Image (cartoon, rainbow, N blue to C red):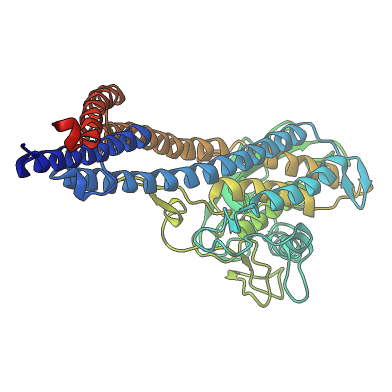
Length: 501
């Protein structure tokens, strides 16, 4: 009688071991089919693990850039929305200024001026915009509110002067004690001299040019220090209708023409002088008419120019970071502007004002070799221009009973309208366009990263992923082998000595 040998028993053990291996392989394939991954560990990937680690590191870097881009885009989109509203305020204010006549509604102000005050409040709110606890228009000082409230800007607070006081001081300095725009009119016999009250100071009228068609009259200048224009009459008297024309430079950079016409009328009308019986009488009439004409222009055009110049000095602080005001008192004889201090003047912009550009105050690294600078400051020239134009209208007051105020009001409105065309400088539209280019750069960087991430993801999938169809086929093959092995194992398990025999 023969019995199973050791080799047959060993064979049965081998089949059992194969079954275990097949089961383990089948479980691994099922895991791969469920997870889509070749291995649960990097070690299981063999040499491919280095490529997987590199791809995942690159994808993490890309994700970091994309998050930075997303945050920058959110901020830029919000800033652009606020700038659009600032632009519209400027457009509306310019439209109002082009159609303004003096009709006081309340507090010495017209309806357009009251609207300007509301718009100033809105401008302050727009420029104080914050997102996620960061003030967008404060430069690097993102935790600082950049602009005080409108009441403080206009009226000041405590000992600190606001825009209204700065304008009043500048008007006094520009008009001078005699109200003639810091010009002196003197006469000696038949000669009249018109001279600036000093050389080098920025206030009042500046003599730019003089021209004459007056017969028998000598006109010279402006010349000398301080500059002066001399008008000398002779026995040959002017004829009616002949004129002297003076071109005057105003404190806001504009110019004004003053014309005096000879007439036989007594009294003469505005802008005219009576031809007298002789040279001395004619010179005396000319002196009186010149003083009257200068006074009227000083109280209207020069006063409006003075308000605009004061508002510009108050708001245009991008370089020095401080407002400028008249060095006084006394103000009507002042000869210089001085920088305001935090103790005596309201600083309208309180954010960061470093030497670099406003854009450089916020920088996003969006690629290994690319950064996008997209910072903003409330005191950038286009924004300060709108603040200055709206602020000067909101601060001024008028009286319909004052004979000069209609002209002053019209002169101020014209200057505000002109200012809001942004002559020779970047406009709010330009600022919006500039930041739009930053948005385009961010969008292109995002597109590049999205494409690069897709490539990396595909490579990663090819390296550590599996083909579900291939795994399914392997599972079917293993299932067939496992069934055969189990059948064989079952047959061996049922084998007894009796059955064997």
